[in-house]
Each structure stands twice: as C-alpha cells, then as structure tokens.
Image (cartoon, rainbow, N blue to C red; front, side):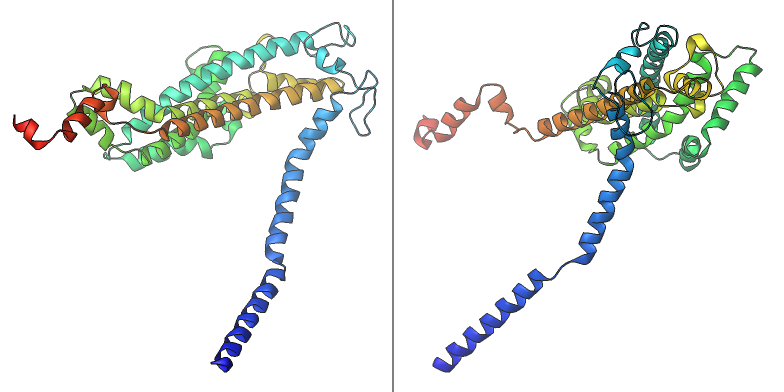
Length: 329
C-alpha cells in the first residue's frame, strides 16, 4: 500500500509539472495574431484620430504634424460661422448648404432603401420561379462601379429629357446602391425568423393585416432600421455616385469637400469638417447598436402565462388547490 501511495503521488507531481510547463509555454501564434490585429486597428483609425487632433489647432494651424497651438475651436467654428477665421476665405456658407443637402438626401435615401429592401425581401420568403435570377439582379449594384452607376442614372434621365438634380441623379444612384445592402440585411433577418409565430397569431383569430402589424413588424424592425442606416450612411459619405452631379447650390457634403480640396487652399477647417462627418457616421452605428441591445433586452424579458396577464392567476391557483370533496360539492 505504501508503495502504491508513493507511486500515485509521484504520478500526480509529474502531471502537475507537465501542466505547469504547458501553461508557461508561450503561444506565439496567439501573440502574433494579436499584434497583427493591433497594427490593423492603428492603421485604420490613426488617420482619423490625427485628423481630429489637428482640427483643434490655433489660427496658425497647418496640415501636417506637429500640432500648432494653442488649442482652439476656431476651425470648428469656421465651418458654421463665415466670419471666422477670415470672412474672405471662409467656406462656411457652402459647407452649411451642402450639409443640409446631404442630410435631407441621406434621410430620404435611407427611408426609400428601407421600404424597398423590406418589400423585396418579403417576396423571397417563398420560392418562386426565377428567384435565383432576381436575387443576382438585385445584387448587381454591388458589382457595378459607382461611377458607372452614376453615369447610367444620368443617361437615363437625359433620355427622358429631364435635367439632372439632387432628387433624381444623386438620390436614384444612391438608392440603387443601397438596396443591395439593405436587402442582404433583411434576408439574414428572415433566415432566422420563425414563421410559426404568424401561424399562431392567425390561429388565435388575427387577420393578415393585424398579424403583419402586431407580430411581423415588431419582430423584424431592427433589420428594417439596419437597412435604413445602410441607405443613410452610404448616401452621407458618397462621392463616386454623385461626382457627375456638379451644381454649386445643391452640392452634397462629399462633393463640397472634394471641390475645396482640389480647387482651394487646404486648411485645418477641412480636418474639422472631416471629423464632423465621421462622428455622424459613428452616431448612426451607435444608434444601430442601441436598437439591437434594446431588442435583445425585450426578447430576454420573462414570459408570463395568459391567465396571469389577465389577472386570473390567483383564482386558477386557488381552484387547483381546492380539495376534491369541495369540488364535488
């Protein structure tokens, strides 16, 4: 017995030592992938962070590092106030007009993309003849260069003998571009959708309209909101599909930034403007994440029995506990 005990202890110590050696061994693959990911994040976000820092330079600010102080918000003020820093070289009026145009255009494009993506995806809930061809036709916008898409849209309106404008050329091209992204979002939502819920609603007496309004839409509204955000952000940041549309009074914000970059002196106010547009895009992403979080919280809420929701739970529990003799009486 003593020999067996010593042998068992020796085996246990050997296993413990082997485990300690494995734990001390460096996983170079994990560290290498982690370092690569860190470099990728720096490469991706460092220019935006540097642009934001340089936008807070003083009046003597430049476009290159180092930072020229003192710290000031004068370049941020210059994109909304034409009197700063110099009323003769300010672009505040153009930027404000372009910002309003981009905002209304992006909201309109997002709404149209959401509606069209949702209705198109509803058709694909059931198989039909030619559904594969229809799917690839919708996805064609993803494979078409943005400039060619804008050119085709402009040629279409020219053929109809209509002049190009922000609500035809730009809106049409960006809606076509955004539908493919919104459609993919809605298709992924329908792939996880349980159709038995709608069947249960119809079994309980709800008609098609009420089922759609009170069951289907509350379950897929996050996908609909995601399609809207795709249409909004793609239009907000678009340049390729809008570059053929050049009219100073109705320029979009990316076109205005491009025009100031190519035709005028570049100043730190463009850094402030670029940072502002980036913050708008990030705000849209944050709204999407909040919507998803709220949706997940509601889906995780406890489900109560119908009798409890109607206030009948206590009575039913009393009835179940009633003695058999009293029930018979």
